[in-house]
Length: 494
Ligand SMILES: *Cc1c(COP(=O)(O)O)cnc(C)c1O
Image (cartoon, rainbow, N blue to C red; front, side, top):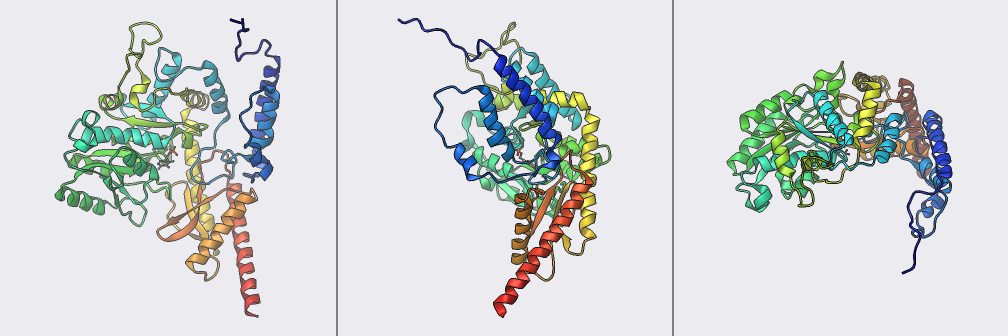
């Protein structure tokens, strides 16, 4: 046997790595400090795309050169959600302390599946803080997840197992005595349907109830749906209420739904990915009264706590039910009275065993800023939503397409006498031009049957002047496009 020298990923001399690390930190601050001067987003050239088509490298490359590639080929083509004028879909805008914490979490290196570590204590504490923030009892349980999709799925799994009327873990869903039915409005996020499909219950287990004029779950229609299903032999299982819908930010009538679930012996689940944290906003907290009565709740620190992606959280009122839904250890994973394994296994509260130390980025930024600041920033975004709404209402060329409940504004350029399909085409073009020129990133949606631009102001860097600019640009682009359309019609006729 030849005697190979033993290797490691750690170099004998760290000098180059340390130099690169110092450069990274300096560049990072310069990048975040100058966001406003740069386009929100830019299209990657084909040469950059091609850069990612090479085979796996066999040979080494200095870390400084690898970092150069990140600087030239990756960072300039980011999504842009850290920028003050990013309002597309629904994202947080991150924060520097959270970013630094992600580095420290990797240095700590702990696996948060379990273990007698301070990292696990931080994870537990962050879950406890989130419970406190949404006024869940101290006896409730929770788990940090990758995001709201997994958080909803964790909650709905507990709901399914509790309500099934059979031991689902043992017998599986084919043994269900009655088909389960989950109720929600037509404004529900797709994550709930995906969860029910994945849980083997099927899309039909999701009974979609219409929403009312304010885009909230219609309570009369909900009651009727439950009654009809019961009569038809289904088991009304759970209401999925949304605190802040993704489309328009509507908040379902929580106290009424909580009462109804109590009366009907149903599980009350709140998808609070957007709105649960309004609980910490001093001016608007009453908007989400009643969510604290939920049996389970999904929320998303990577939205209104601006935790760098990713971080979601599932909370369950009955900790024992939560534990018994997921608890399972192989013989290689026994809890011990002492040593590294002398701890609760955090992996017993969800599907994932190996888990990252995502708690640290939440823990450090909450400690640094204080939770009151995050609450004020939520109020600030909601006030900016009203401000933008007012600008739109005062502008004869624009039209509000849904009532603004919180920080999501749905509107369109209306111009003069255009049909729905023409309006959709024109507003889509406005949106794409805003994105491609890097001026702003709104997204779009359809409310009822009207297509519109959608501005979700979940951004601690946005200022009113950014919204002024948006309105100016949408109006200008709309007028330009309408004029061009007229001219081309006229030239066709002549
Ligand atoms: C964002 C969102 C989700 C999905 O959460 P992810 O963190 O993207 O997985 C679910 N429900 C609502 C209401 C959301 O806004």
